[in-house]
Image (cartoon, rainbow, N blue to C red; front, side, top):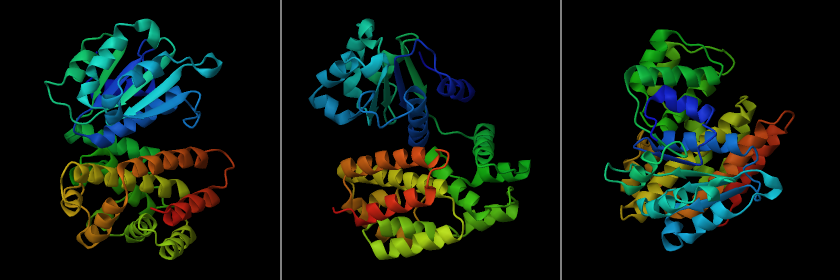
Length: 342
């Protein structure tokens, strides 16, 4: 079953059909696919670090060992709860495995499988298998939004940040922001940091953030941490925290940066030059940062980036707990990241 309407897809992500056991997210908006994957995962398993309930698999590894997905689906959950299997970068070659699972519905009674794939074309066998399976399997195409749909998304994200904005501001942002959901959130995070404490966004704020590099300090922190410059990372973090930058905003910006590095490293591993992969990122990397980001792409492997991204997601969950030592948590994570040996 395929859900294409943005409103219907959003409603499904918020409250999935109880019959759904395999959910596929694919399309040109990789940021939206990742966002939906994360939202669904948290809904099915509040503690994503629970090894008895959550299993993470890298899609390409299933090509070499397809039985792994069948085994994970058949494994009972500790305590009787449903198990969650997360598969990232799912290749189209997994289609026969998914088809086999759908032929054995009893194996899916105690688990939910979330598949995040790239921009699968119309001839994709994986798309066909899920589209034709009925309510037990659901496909959520992640297309790039335009016009009114993008404006609604911008308004929703601003509301999540507790920011009010007149219609003209939302319309302007929809026209200026990059279409990829992760990139869009990254820019809106910078905007939220810029207007922190005011509760509202004006056109002047929009142009100040999107036209100028006011997120330079945040970029400098991320570059220092990913390049192992502990001293510069520490000094920049202290400055941002002294300016009352929210720890949650810092971890979200870190996640967005890691996702972009992951995309560029994937392109490099596929044969592109690291610098070319960085220059193709959207929104474009500020030209002065290209050398630093290129070094990060060369320095970090895909498995390492995926490991750190998983850690970052866990930190965000911890930061949102009532009474958590948020400053200590974000400081410890970023300093450990900067000190990590490659």
